[in-house]
Length: 404
Image 1 (cartoon, helix red, strand yellow):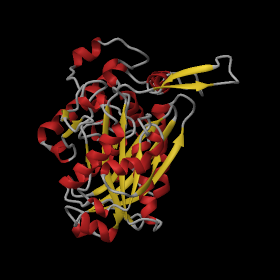
Image 2: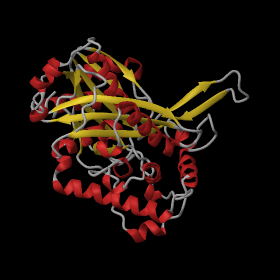
Image 3: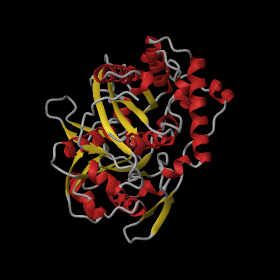
């Protein structure tokens, strides 16, 4: 493994101090009934307990969400109260990039010496997302009502186009073939179901009870509800909504949370369930593609990041991304002349859903777990956000025989 200087020399992600809920699809679970900020705080408390991490170890909290929830004004301090631990923190938001940005922000807090143990908690509930009323005195439409999820998915005010139009435009630019897009989607489903059957996801996903305001159990979130098994014939039969895009080759709205810790090298050894494993931050970057070319943006971000740190795609042990459309992965493969079968080995958002805030946090956790299974190496996590933004980050996983 090539030796590359880390972006944050002081910061580490302690192995095994993480966890994610399952991501049930929109309106399919008890998560549709509750305050997602409260659920996320209580779920983090539960996950820390399972990982044998006293919550008193936490000094600071970075939360990430993109959809308004009750009392969001109070953000991280309120969520910390649901965690039942009185600490400070702040809220971060950047559409689907939120989950990775929050992890990087935590690394910066630790590396700069501001904190020693930072909790990252990302969450969102697309179910029953609120509608906001906006007085607009300078517009002919004096009062606008905006459905936070569906109106934003359907309309980018900077371009006037819907998200799905970005996928179609990217497919046309890169001359994507519908048969390849369908084949890729089918392969992604197979990867997910193999990971479920092997027990891999049991190390990442935590069944969680959902309580009502009286503390009674409304239900248990113990499955990525909404995932449907597909076959080649059913994919071929689906109507093309835009170039190479069908209902079977795009993700679905869902609900969920994910959490992990970031700390110093010394504290990581103390807190980790396997202290011989070291996880470092190597680099991160963001780019913007041309308008409405969101599926291209992740590839541009990865290229910029690899050039910056002096690594190549072939140096990566694990590649995993946020892919709301199968077209994203086809474009990435074309851009790098890369075999798309060699990425997303344990599943991906295309299959298990898109709750926005926690999506890339779960992606990162799964990617780090996969790297540990492989004995270490560089981990590349990337994705898209908000019309034409790409984000990418590289982590390095080493074991006790290769500590630096």
